[in-house]
Each structure stands twice: as C-alpha cells, then as structure tokens.
Image (cartoon, rainbow, N blue to C red; front, top):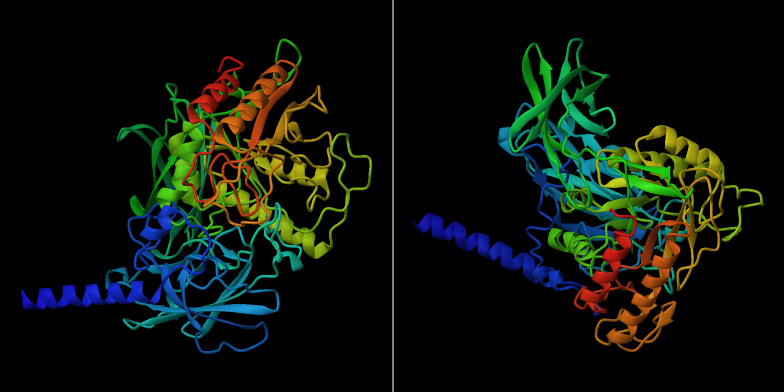
Length: 603
C-alpha cells in the first residue's frame, strides 16, 4: 500500500508540475475548452480513424523549444511549448511570431514500450507548417515540405535498445514571404487575413507495425455498379501476399473481396445502405494482409456508399444529385480557426462542435475554406452526416481577377518551383483524404489567389479522382472546365453569371456582421460586409437573404455557401462568436429557413 501511495503521490506531483509550468499565453479571448486542457493528455484520441491499429503512442505534450536565426545551430532551450499548438498560438504557451528569418527547434524524449520489440516503429507527423527536418538520437532521418500533409519515418534502425530516445525537429516557415500554400496566414494580420501558424500543428505519434504492413487505403464507392473498390498500399510485400477486405454491418460480414498487392479489391453486394446527411450510414471494414494463409497485418477502417453527380433537370438546369436524386447542397464557409489554438482545435470535442452546430442550424454542407483539417474532423463529418467541399489552401498571389465574366486574360504564371510546390501538396492532400466519404468536391482555387494553369490543374484533378466533382475556381477567374461555375456575391445573393452546361453555384455570400463585446479578438477594428446592432436585426437580414436565395434556386442556382460559421480575428460575420460562446442569431428561425433551402428540390 505504501508503494502504491508513493507512486500516486509522484504521479500527482508530476501532473501538478506540468500544469504549473504551462499556461495559455496572452490575453486574447479563449474557448471554454481551453480551460480544460491537461498538458499530460493533449488531443489524446486516436488520430487516424480511417485506418486504425490498436497500438500507438501519443507524443503530444510539453516539448523543449527555441527560436534562433535560420542558419544558427540548435541552441539551449528557451522554454517549453505545448505540442501540437503552433508557436504563435496562446495554447502553445509561447505565443511568439517566428518570422521567415528564424527557425523553430523542438526537442523531447520518449521510450518505446518493451512489448513493441520485434516490430517496426513508425514516427508520424500529421501536419507541420512548413518545412521540417527531423533527427532521432542526433541522426538526421528525413525532412518534409508542406503545411497540410502528413508524413512518416520508419525510425526502427535509429532506436537505442531499451533506452530513452531523443527526438529533435527544426521548422522554417516563410508565411507570406514564400509561394507555398498558406491559406489565410499573413505576417501582418488584418481584415480577412489572419495570424501566422508555424511549426507542429497536428498530432505527433508512434505506431508499431509488422515489417510488411499496410500503409494506406483508398476506398472508392460506386453505387451504380453496387461496388466498393479498395486499394491497399503495402510496404515490404512479397510475391504471393494479398489483401482481404471484409465489409461489416453491425458486426456481420455483408461482403468481402481479395486482391494481390498492387491490385484493387472489387467488392459487390446488392442490398447496399446508402449514405446521406439525412442518414449517414457507415459500414465497418476489416482489412487483412495475408501471407501463406495467415494474417500478418490487420487494420480497421470504414466506408460509405454514396454518389455525388450533376444532371440536367426538366428545365435544362444542371442540378446536383446525391445518390441519383436531385439535391440542393447548402452550407457554411468554415475556416476552422480557433482564438486559442489558431489552426488547432483545443480538443476533439471542440473539433466536433462546429460540425454539430452546423447540422443543428439545418445545413447539409461545409465548405472547408483554404485549410485542411486533422483526420478526425473528416471522420466526424462522415459520422454526423455533412457534405464537404474541400479547398486547396491558397498560396502565391492574385495578379488579375475577373469575377463576373469568363476569363479573357492570360492565366497568371507562377515560377516552376511554386508550381511544383502546389502540385505536390495538392496531390498529397487528395491522397490523405481520398477515403473520406463526406468529401464530395475538390476546390483547387479560390478567388484567383495563386490560380494558374486552371484547365490543366482541373483536368488532372478530375482524372486523379474521377469519383468526385471538381469546383475549378470558387469565385475566381472562370474557365469552362470542371463540374460547376462558382460565383461570389456579397452581401446578398445574386446571379451575376449563369452556365447552361454546368451547375451554377453561389460559392460565397452573406457576411452579416454583429460585434459582441467581450467576444472580440480586436476591440477597435472589426469588420463585416454589413453590420447590425443586435441578434434580431441580424437574424432578420439573414432570413431576408435566405428568401432571396429561395427565389433564385428555380432560376438556376444549384448550391450555396453562407459566410460563415464563426467570427475570426477581425471578422465579426460569423453565426457564432470566435470563442464559440454565443450563437449570434435566432437558431430556430435560421434553421427553419435553412431547411426550406435544403429541401427546395424535394430532397
């Protein structure tokens, strides 16, 4: 009993010490979830639900950090940073601007569990913005460029048997001083541009795997042919290895298929249950890697059978169809920023909350705006039932913008290096997100920012993933390619262009502002397309715009996106405050009119 008591006391002391040395930095507004953070257990949920193994280790938590000029050697630590929150964020405990002339160094130690002996150990970084170099026990093991794609290293050869391992990471991020994808980050935030996000901003974790193991799944539904295609990428395979896939409903196998390594398992069954926002049914999947009749690796996954397409209706208007039935996608521009964590939600509950509120308000769609979320966000969308239009985060600049006409200029040119950065990261984003059924549309460009070789990029995207629609340039320079024409009009809905050969969508409108004292990032420079003084006036304006949209749907609009889910730094045009503490409009009234819009085509 004395030994147990002593251990408990030691644990409590260590926990208390961690709390004592970490505190949110700065005096900006925060969410309620920020007050519940335990630095010993940060974002502790399994980070990759689309391909899950039972064993893993979370490396989130307090790491040593330092900031020095880019070319300088790693110095002694300046202090501790809470990973995975960006160094500029409050929840990092640091809240310092990195800048393009400096590098951010991280370091921590860990021990590999003894029960992992004999397995390969993978080190996963789910996202680091922007350029990362990684050392293990002072041996450089690799590097990665790209702020929105995950990367991994097999660290097995560099581990020291039974000893403490030292992990070191160096990050450089030029923010808007470089051409790389960065979304809304700028060095001098203001208006619609926000605080930089540098360094580790998604979970860091370890995973033990067999020497031959599954490292990626591509699950593509085809309801017309009653087929699910599953392609497993395998590391270290031998001739004769194959993959076996079992599709389950409530624990019972309803279909299965097999494929040799490098081939696609095509799985057929007749009585498929279809996924929709109204009925988000998911099938469980079990994927096994078989050698000589025995499973040498196994992962859990899931999938959904759904189809998003376009078809001309009886009036000649191209409409979206979900599962071959006319459907009106209507949703929110969702930028996914947090006042305390910037790019990183303070908890999984917080990450899920915005999706839940979007559903509660009566929407069926989220346009994830110039940002990519952690894997768990997409799983929440799959489970809760919400369609997702996924943007490519913009980078480089906007040289010429023609909003309400087909582009008649010369498509702006990026440098060869800038083009390569874009293409590499866009492919990586699609690869990472290919299996999430809630994602129904890819959006490579937004409002001409970094837009280049539009026809080439759209063609490549369509060919690389023919199972989804492509919105070529939301509100940008318009070309007659892809599946839709997307125009932006603020504040009220208006159809300034129409395309008789593709779906016409209102990719952004609204932006109704209501500043609420006590919930503002800035106290002196808040901005919205229009501003009102109270919830009643704001709700009235929202309903007025919604009714205008209802009148435009028969005339040709086939989808619409309202700006936006929450306030964000200097923008006060969210349905909720930036700290998520207040819904600024009458929820019942907006839900009522939103459902009318969603059901306007009878879906």
